Image (cartoon, rainbow, N blue to C red; front, side, top):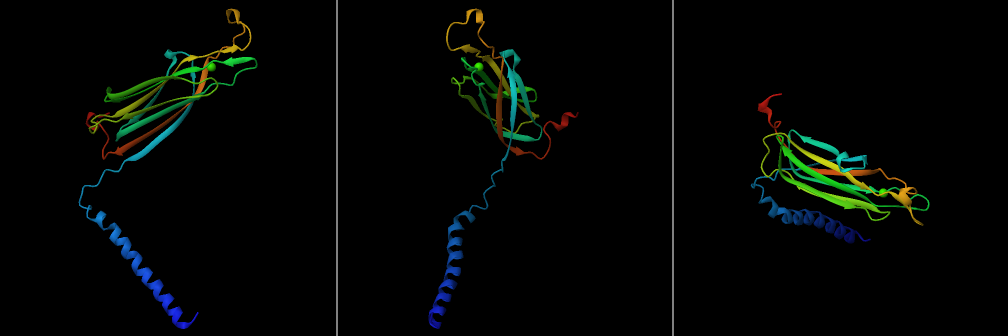
Length: 200
Ligand SMILES: [Ca+2]
């Protein structure tokens, strides 16, 4: 490369270095004009995963409490998944039916958002239920909690694939099922604990 070419190449780099920040500034300028608007409250994300086993029977439901003493929860999402045990030899494992319920309470009283859904897994496949709830529309005045309720309403038994099962003699009982619950929520952290004036 000749000396003059080298100079031109260097100049080209210098122009690029100047031009690129200029383009960046002009692209971001409209956003800078919005700086005097009130800043949106930053929402934090939390969550947990639960693995457990439910006994058969709606009255044997399992409850999981999520207390929020200094948080304003905006959304609360729960997904329940389960997979039936593999079928025994010469048997077919009949599907299982779960009910998932979620409700929120503030100061001991449920607020208006709650949801419940029942589902049965496809034969030999995974079952799932998803529920999405909102938190209270206004800043809560009392500690808040969400309660997740899981019930295995019916665990379909292992029935023989060939021939009858008189009096259930050849049927193998299915009396429980493992499940997973994935909980995620968005919340605003508050400056002081909720309901602090009541003491305790
Ligand atoms: Ca089953």
